[in-house]
Length: 210
Image: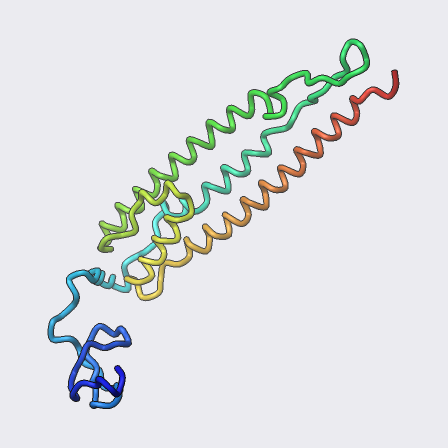
């Protein structure tokens, strides 16, 4: 408030955002703060009830949700590009012998199918974890549908559980982050190995001369 339009001393809504009232002495805001007589804003989210200290906050389902992406990434190593190239009958060109070899042949479709099953399992496990947290007394747990966005569910779940469990419940977040980093590293390694095999096969099959 400016001095030119300063109101009389009194209790006013706290401009610092505490949600209560702060005392204005007619010149400046003081350190005196009190709860608002009007209660909480109807637009403010209701506070979740704190869990008893003996309530377990981890389930087998959240650990599966955190770890399954790593298993899905490791499936990449089942894909081994077969020799892609052979010399044409004329001896003047190199042609692709099997277009599906670049994708790993039939193994590619098997790996993709398993990956989709693991993704579906992650969603089901997230729902089971959400249901179990509700049974244990967690009010409005982080919704399981966020599992469609991968790592978002373990992160949101851990933050909410930590808030109602006195700081407990963050381990799935760190495991999920570590799995995410490891998955990227594994995928990058696989990509480099695959490109090396493809390039090596192409070089080996290039005609030396006419």
